[in-house]
Each structure stands twice: as structure tokens, then as C-alpha cells.
Length: 296
Image 1 (cartoon, rainbow, N blue to C red):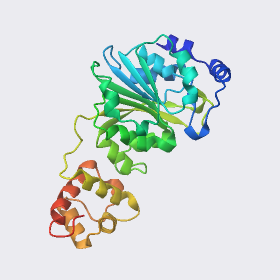
Image 2: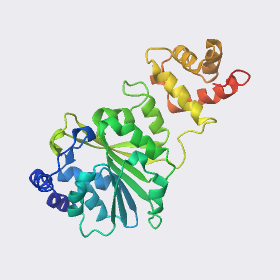
Image 3: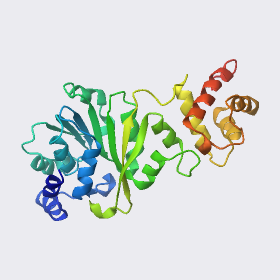
Image 4: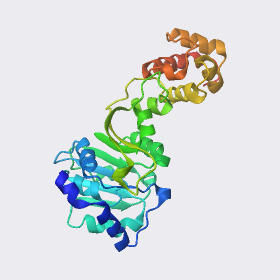
């Protein structure tokens, strides 16, 4: 596949294509096109695409990953927000009859409707190069949609990847970490430097793979309450759990202290030290603690 990737795009060819079709890259959309053949190959390989699989791609750009995925998959559906890229995508993807490109904002796309087009596919993986400013909304648009996703391979800013992969106790561990790891197993794929893109971004990037879990990592009685607890614990990182949760949930400190101690958690700990399992215990006990009081 690397030979195919190398033949598809080089910085010179990309610049020529952009000039040919009068396309100017838009900084506000975070457009940095990947041109490193090795990285392109590893991204597609990380999706572990089989011949009967489908691939949903977000932000195909010039269509290089799209083309590589189409050579492996039964069907590829890509969503591109920038319609000015249409002539480039049409040229790159010419002759590939298993590819569809939709020009839309993926956050406004009903994923369940897209997934109906994958009805004859064995499973569906997602590949996306996510601009920093919109990484989290797109990630949760996918994870909260309820559509079955085998692998989610995303390129994000390195700092975001560090947060996705963080472990309790570290500076990168936060509400985003808990929310994603509640739904998926996060694995590093590779680091990508600015030189792999045209134009080079000002930051380093990381490709990660999310293996979406068939069911959440922990079972909880009230998922909404779980994430209220998580948000509260990280809202003010310097506060102890006792103070942070009491303030965020509007509960007396005596109630919160009793819940934390029943969960085996020291009230003086801070949110960044808690595992997902500990957050689950706390939220489940809060369901009972809140009965008889105003609902948290």
C-alpha cells in the first residue's frame, strides 16, 4: 500500500492540484493536508479494514486516505465540509465506484442514516483528521450516536491525544479522559510531525485508535449523574473532592463526605486521582444519597 500512497500525492502534486482548481486552504477549518506516504499507510492499516468492511471518513481533504481505504474496503463514505474541494476529490476518486462523498458539516449529519448505507458491510470503522477546535464535539457526536463502530482512528493535536490516553494521577487526566475511556479503549498509533503536512501546522499531531466497547467500561445506575460527578470533580482541579462535588452538585458537605467514605474514597483526594471505577461507585451511591433531598 505504501507504493500506492507514494504515487497518490506529494507536496508538489498537491500544490499543483490546488492551483489547478483554484482552491485556497482555509485556516479556519484547520486544513493541513497529509502528504507523508508512511503516515498515510499506517493510518489506513490502523483501521484494520477487511474486504467486507465499511469505512466512514471525516474530512477527506484531497482524498488520499479515502482512496487507500477504498482499495481495502467494500464501501467508503466520506463527509467533507468544504465544497470547494469537490473538483479535487472528483479527480482523485475517479473510477472508484465504492466511494460516496457527502458535502456537509458532520455535526449536522444523522449518523444512523449514514450507517444504513453500510447495511451490507460486516462492520464499520471511522477514520478522521480532526482540527483541534472541533475535536471534542465530533468525537462525542460519534461515541454518543449509538451506531456500531469497530475502530475509530483519529489524528489529533498531540496534547489532545495525551489527554485521551492519560491515566489517573497525571496532569493530562481529566473529564475528557474519563468520558472517552468509559466508552472506548484508547491506543497510540504514531506521532506525526509538522513536516508530514502541507502547509505544516504549528503543532505536533498524534494518531490514536479507539476500540469502541460493546458496552461501557463500568455499569452505572445513572449515566447522566456519573458525568455530572466527573465534571464537578474536574471543574476546579485544586479543590478536594469534598469541596468540588458539594459545590457542583449543590449537596451538603456532610452528605458528600458520607458518600465518599462509603465508596472508599478519601474526601481530601482530588478528581485527577480517581479511576473510572471510583467515579462509578461515587455516582451510584449519590443516587441513593439524593433520595429524600432535592434531586442532584
